[in-house]
Image (tube, rainbow, N blue to C red; front, side):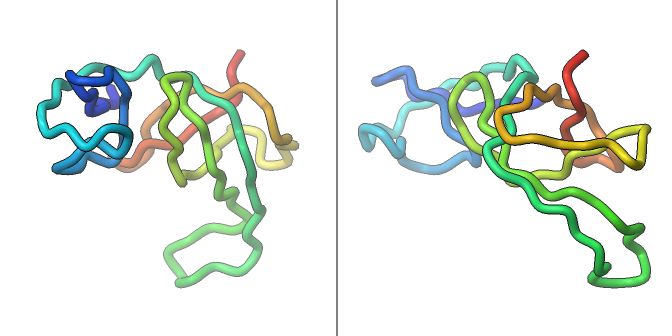
Length: 105
């Protein structure tokens, strides 16, 4: 479950949580669960690991949630040869306690 911060003044969601609304500057918020769906805005395939702990290749992406906020995250697939595309629908899943996204079925 991914929780988003919603401004009670303008009803806009934001992620990561902040002290002020990025849309209207208000300071009163509520918390709501994200739907888990989104669209790939941009991505890159990384072939050089930053440390020995990383298995390559892996995919880093900018995903726009259905609610509006944008996350920098990883794209994962059981198929290591998976092809990715911008504007592709993805769904939230979890890996090692981190929010990652997989292709929507």
